[in-house]
Amino acid sequence: MTEPAPPADDLLAQLRALQARDLPVHGGRTLAYVYDSGLAEVDRVGREAVAAYAGSNGLDPTAFPSLLAMENDLVGTAADLLDGPEGCVGNVTSGGTESVLLAVQGARDAHAVRHPGPDRPAPAMVLPDTAHAAFHKAAHYFGVEAVLVPTGERTGWRADVEATAAALDLLGDRAALVVASAPSYAHGVVDPVTELAALAAARGVRCHVDACIGGWVLPWAARQGRAVPPWTFAVEGVTSISVDLHKYAYAPKGTSVLLHRTAALRRPQLFASAAWPGYTMLNPTLQSTRSGGPLAGAWAVVRSIGDTGYDLLVRDVLAAVDAIVAAATDIPGLRVVVPPDSSLVALATDETCDAFTVCDEMAARGWYVQPQMSFAGHPPTVHLSVSAATRPHVPELVTALAASVAAAQAAGPVQVDPGVAAYVGALDPAALTDADFDGLLDAAGLGGPSDGGGLDLPTRMAEVNALLDLAAPALREAVLVSFLDRLQRPVRGGTGSSGPAA
Image (spheres, rainbow, N blue to C red):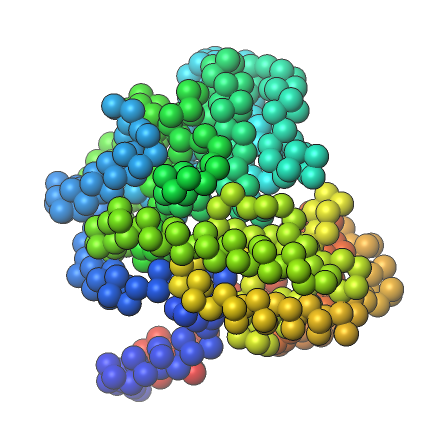
């Protein structure tokens, strides 16, 4: 016999109990995944707007004209902010990844128009190895080869212009897109957009600037007299820009804006189909049904904060970044990888400790900072996405960081058992089996049966991260896909009964 549904108050209590295990989204102590303005009234306005439009559907703008009005208003605001010329157009998407996917898809389809016929060259895009992984996802989804140009200390972790030109020359007619970041996520620096866009324009290909993380920070930073390299539509040759509203516009998740210099450049993104007996499908983005909630939340937050408010928030963010960078240089065993251009800070450790243990120690002190794996011979790093809400707590953060590094030094760098390291080195990422993965789980102390019984996630992740760090990127990808598959197994019997356990 089916049990009656629990009262609404009981369900809400269950939600609160479940959420208590999550990272805090307010308070400025979570320096990844969330972006906190510290403005309680702005957050309230955003939540109420999301709730008011949760049932609205952006699938048909004629049915919900208020959504169309808000989207056009947000796109216009972004175009004004980013020096969009007359004729600049755009759309609100679900996040930076969707914006990037659409930019690559549009470049691919435009490439096909330029090179019609059965012998068309396979499209490729050139990007620095610091470009966001969303471009690799787009390459996977849309059949566009990602040609990576190495960066490093020699280029200040910025795109290498000469190497990009050489890659474009080798590709010839295959080139469809050049990518730049403003700033790159891993290191927080702006690529030489002027030079990269000129390379693209000279070859008649598109240039996309991924400003998802910095697009709502850098314009105010420049107005405040900070040295910001040119990167907006004021740079000739830039054809599209992505900027997230749910990052430093402090809007509710998930909203981003993808801007195109002209309507003609956007045209391949628009999709229509009348090839079935139902309604004629017409979509400007990857989604068909689009909840009006995030769009309304973003519109309300952007209007609530306004230009003056964002100027103050950016001042807070950059003041916090300056203080963290200055303090980090005085902590023995720690260094700033590169002076940041925006709101992101990457920290590396010396041989006396490791970044993964520092992250664990910060978590033990109530701060979440993000571990980044080693790449191309460069060591792991500690990554901080600094929000405005962090500024009042910078002295506490710096104290915690110094104590965390000292604790990591006292513990010493994480050592992976040589036998486990050999086991990892012998694995084939193309043929990773459940038995292989179970062996890795045992080695990492995670346990967990392969029948969906769950995983025993530890509170400290340094040893797990050190084990992953041994793996080559392809193996790391295969292991993490298996990990995600094992995590996401259904809870049977939950719907219609007592719901998820707290």
